[in-house]
Image 1 (cartoon, rainbow, N blue to C red):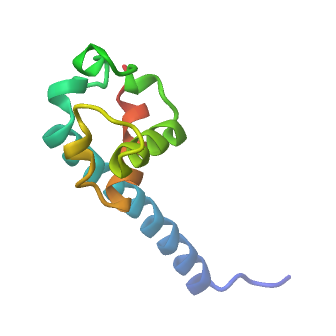
Image 2 (cartoon, one colour; image 1 turned 45 degrees about the vertical axis):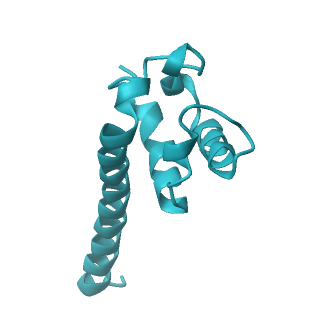
Length: 105
């Protein structure tokens, strides 16, 4: 019977923890950004229609959110929030896209 090297097991376990922490950090950054820049118009849980014109964002998929933010940032879609969205970088857009669907209560 072949023994499993405990060092390999520890390394695999350590790598899995690193990946989880990275995912949590992205959601944490997304939450910080959302609270600072989005809650006024979209609500704490993404439950509001911003300016009475947008869809309820917590009902959207991460891909739909990513596309909408990217298109607003580029000016392809015009709206009141474009000035804020034009300041988002790629990482911000990804973080918000993953966070917003988790806000739904």
